[in-house]
Structures are given as structure tokens and as C-alpha cells.
Amino acid sequence: MSELDDLRAEVALLRERLDVLAGASPRFAAVYPAFEDRFRGAEAEVRERLAVHLPRVRAVVTPGAEGPRVLDAGPGRGEWLALLAEAGVPAAGADDNAAMVRRLRERGLDVAHADATTHLEGLPAGSLDAVTAFHVVEHLDLEALLGLLAAARRALRPGGLFLAETPDPTNLVMGACNFHIDPTHRNPVPPAQLEFLVGAVGFTDVEIVRLHPKEDLDLSGLRLDGISARASAAVALALQKGLFGTQDYAVLAAVPG
Image 1 (tube, rainbow, N blue to C red):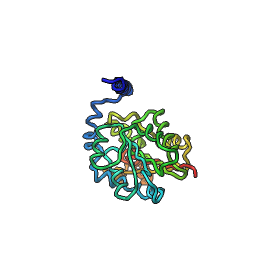
Image 2 (image 1 turned 90 degrees about the horizontal axis):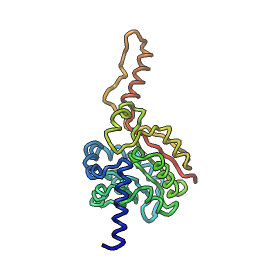
Image 3 (image 1 turned 135 degrees about the vertical axis):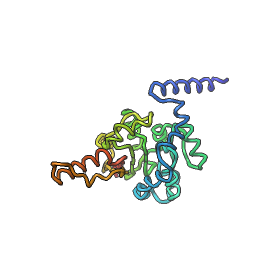
Image 4 (image 1 turned 60 degrees about the vertical axis):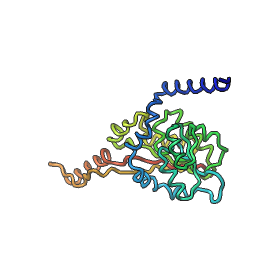
């Protein structure tokens, strides 16, 4: 074994130890594709949910530019990258999960096996039209989240778009239970917090968009004994939002032109 091989082995061991200290599990990483298949939802359903973002992203892509113009951080099963490819948007992804990367490359998608922040930091400044991150920020601690936002801000051109989607903890069922099904989630990210952090690293026109309301139960007809219809309606609305409200939200922001 050469000295270079020795160094590579040592780096791999150090990375594994750091992952353990950070709470990551190499064993769980190996089965994460199957976990996504079970809990993320059918790919057709996910594609339908993500398609709402296509017009906004297509609007910022530079016509005729060479190379990937969109970088998707943590592309998961690749639904978003596939949608972009079908729409003629040149895009690539970056993911540090080797099993997911192999799966995406087998589908013909352009995905780097790398930490998304590190990958963004290695790109020329201002070389991207959009950076997207679907269900990524909830996996990061504060320093890593700020690092991702800063790297995205640097890699985007003036007028470029940053788009992140994450579970909405203002939905009590999501925040108290469903969020924690994924053991790689660190903590819920309240909309006001993410909105502030995105603005703090230099983005402008920050917008929060609520997504995917749960419609299992319609409480609009709720009537409570001894309470007026108006008060009952107010209680029903509060319950609807708190227990059956939006499952996710997106933050969208621009690089100052």
C-alpha cells in the first residue's frame, strides 16, 4: 500500500469517526434509499408536489448557457433533477450518500458524490442561476446551515434564486411526531428562523410559501355547545391549522442584482 493509500485510509477513518460523533450512522446511510421509498411517498406524488416550483426556477435560468445552471443540494431519489431534465433545465446535484449517488447516476442524472456545501464552495462565484435544497436544512446544525446558505449565496449570480423546502413545524403533528420519523433529522426549522438566516447571509426578497396542507379532516362544520357559531369557527380554524395545516414550507430568496 502506498503512502497516498495510507493517507486516504486515514482520512476515511477520521470521517467515519466524525460522522459517529455528529450522530450519523453508516449502517443507516446504507438503507436510506429504502427508508426514502417508504416514508417520502411515491415518486409520482413527490414529482407532482415539486412541479409547483418549476415555473419560478425556469424563469431565472440563463438561456443558452453552458454547463449546469441549477445545483440541487441533497437530491434524494432525484425527482427534482428528473423534472428539471425533462423541462430542459441544465442541472446537477451533490450528495454525500454514496448509495443515493449510485442510484441517481444509474438513472443518468448528473450527481457529484460530495458534501453540497463543499461542492458549492468549489464552483466559480456567480456561476449558477439557482440553488435548490429539498428537505435538507433540517438535517443540518446551525453552523452547517449557515455554511450552506453562504456557499449558495456565493455561487449564485446576481438575480439568482435560492429555494429550500423543509417540514413545517407550525403543524403540531408534523413538529411533534412525523418530523422525528427520520432519525437523521436534527431539529425542526421554524419558518421565521429560516427566513431570518437567509436574509442574514445577504439574500433579499425573502418569501415563505406554505405547502401541502393535510386534508384528512375538514373541521369547517365544527360546532361547540354553548359557544357561538363565530367562536366555533375560530376554534375550528385554529385546530385545522395546528393539527391539519401545511406539511411543508418553502423559503425563496434572490441574490441582489
